Image 1 (cartoon, one colour):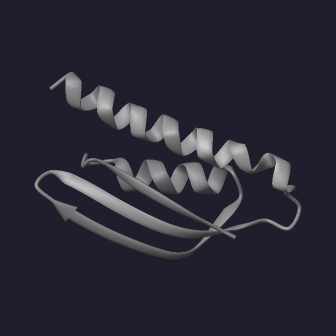
Image 2: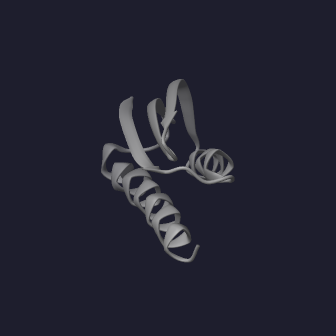
Length: 79
């Protein structure tokens, strides 16, 4: 298990993109806390790794979540 915390500008499809990433990596969300304030959102997730994944593959979720944040930031710049 690991804890992921994301803080970025809120956008309409952020949660669906986050769910898509977690599903594609075969991760199971055990707990999620979300708060929004002033156009920003903070998501804290407790995620379980599939037993077939090794510890070495843990950089994949980190990279995927970073790309999600980068997409959120680039979308805000285009407004």
